[in-house]
Amino acid sequence: MKQFSEQIKKKVEQPIIFVGNSIGGAMATLATISFLDKRMKNIYPLCITFSSPLVGNVALRESIGSQDWLGRFSHVVSKHDFVPRMLLAPFESIALHLISIFSQGEIIMGNDFDPIQACRELLDNVKCLGNSSPYKPFGIYMIYSTQGAACIEDSQAALEMLILTLQSTEENGIADALISEHKSYGDKLKNVFESGYSTRALNIFPESSVETGIALQLEAMGFQTLTKSAFDALKKTIDLKNKHDMDIKDLNSKLSENQSRLAELEWYIKMVSKGNSCSSYDVFKDLGEKKDFHINRHRMNLEDFWDKIIDMVKNQQLPSDFRYQNKWINAGTTYRRLVEPLDIANFYHLHSDRGSCLSIKNRLLPHRVLEKWLDDKNQTRIERGRGRKKTRTKFASLTEDSRFWARVEEADKDLTNLQPKKEQTIIAHLKKSLKDFEAYVSKMIKEKSISMEVFFEESGFMIWWKKYREFQQQHSEEWNQAPLSSNPWKRRNWEFRRQVFDSVL
Image 1: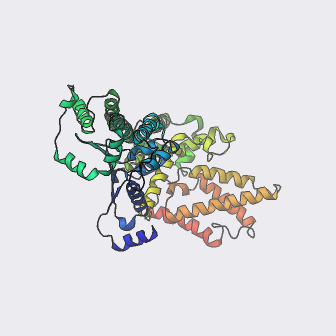
Image 2 (image 1 turned 120 degrees about the vertical axis):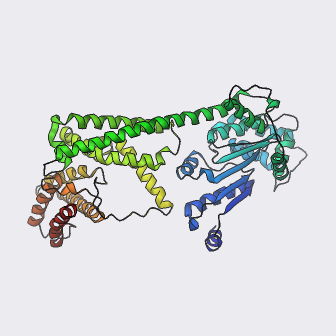
Image 3 (image 1 turned 180 degrees about the vertical axis):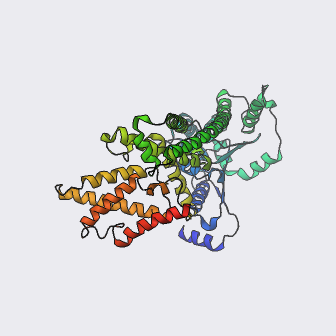
């Protein structure tokens, strides 16, 4: 594989197509995944397989879907060919039969071997256990017969049709069909594309264009009579897609409404904070039970909206790639950066005795989930070679780390608890925690990923910082290596504040 990769890096300048037949199809699939993962020369390949066994489980399918790679894989499958379906049966139930039927592409006929019985047992295992197999299809499946061909993108529909088309195989000639169709893709596919077909063989009268399309697909895959299970499998896929489309349309409308609500919430927060020398976080926390009705109303409505979306994603009521779409990630990130500081303020005002807001149990579900969506998307960008973060020229309007104020609250607790009477192990832990927080703030300042309101004269952070500087001055020998405690940093912090205000003015 290493030699193959080196050759690709040197020679490939045009789009590449991986093609494989039978086991070679599985190898072509794996090679394509490897190629996509390494992003060689930023070329996105295609993979076309013929008679390939399944590759991977649900986790692999979801991973490929999250990378938006599903459209890169196309699999051609004959109606009767067993090989693309063989891993739908437990391996222990098919191993001996496969050895009996195939050996380097040739059929072994021993004196005590009955190929018809062997094939029938193989089929029975697939028919009975197919849906429970850990192996799952992904990509676009083209299932063909002498009547034509049909393409299926939905993975669950593809799985069901792989099983149902095999069930339609007639008992007579079952062994010949399984073996011969595995070897004759070329000629039969040529005949498929040169011939036409109609729905007359199905002897049905479709009631809608949707049902007509389903009938055409079923006939193309070789169903001579309309079976309810096959019809329902395809109809379910179409109905699910239509429902997804309607749900997305409804959510898009509600998103616009909630974006307006978010903008109004931001305006209210600024109005409440106007004239104060502290941050909006501090103002909201100090309001206590007198919190502005408009702020709380918008905050709760926005939380309900994102709770609903997260539930729909969890229950698979939306397309599998929904959570990777930039539109929703960006909207969720803005919501989280604006609203989570308010939730943190509410927590430390009412429930500070319950521990830290940095703990998972004390963090609201929408914030946890939406941050993971953003992290997953960023990881995908990094893997695609697009993860380099742009250098900021101005400080963020909303602090990028939506849990910043929770970290300030915990740093304040650590400083308060840093008493000489404490055990040395506890003191060492608190000192390390404070130094880590210094390094964290230093990094945010350097990257300009922090809001300027953090440095207002009476903000919670600046109050903590003044207390922390006093503590450092009293323990200068112990703290001379802290990121913000050296003389240059002391000066730099106040100069930084002036620069921040100068940049605004």
